[in-house]
Image (tube, rainbow, N blue to C red; front, side, top):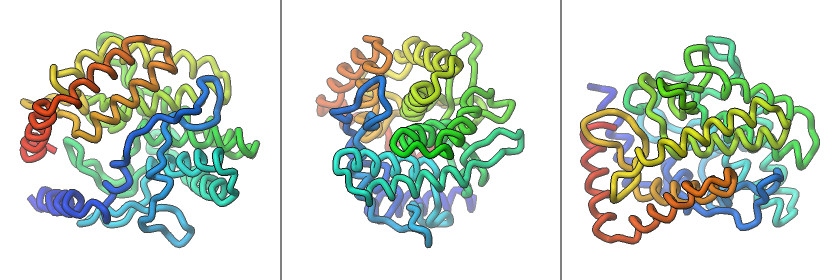
Length: 324
């Protein structure tokens, strides 16, 4: 009961005072980069321009912290650190301002220093705070999204600086993406042989769409960095999983956030629905699979329908009350 109370207190503060909460970082305007090139480790696929201007709290070393309010408070989040680094590196590639590169490197260096072995000996970036997603995740939980986003930053930092520490850390971090969950990694193979990379390691897996897509880009970036055949094979398998399963995320008027199993589907919020549209458009270019652009266009149509928007918001609110 106390855990539930703390959850709702934190949710209230986060949603009603978003400018001082972690939501201020996550809920940016999803925008595809206009100048990314498919076969190059240059500009990241999304601009993350709002994230580049993050003005929230930092630790004594200048590393960004997210304020979750309530019993969690201000914390390092490896996903946010990676995405902030990508945002500043994107800005550097346009501005050539050394301050932007220094910020990207500083946050990349945090990733280098904080990749640690979990209980199974797999090297991961952990979250040092408890989190509620369908169930209570204790401190120390790890995520495919952290691994993928971290690799995307480290790969670009190596390309920009040729500092070997970024290459070596990316190689260590990639291991979790090809290691099954039961062996300490983040990879799940379903009964049909589909390969998933899980944002949250829970049982049964829930297949969060935005996290899977961002992670998939990290796999692609690792292949660009190393040309390891295992990375290309994993990318192709994961892309196939998405091609086969995208219809499951479409409920006729909106997209689903995940495929978690309860009486109500976990519908995407308006922000995550917009993010899905942008991500699918980018993934269509990376994979050359038409189905991704088809769903991006279909879901953009849903977003333009005012009735669908209202239904989705009400549905999401009811889900939040009864589930998570």
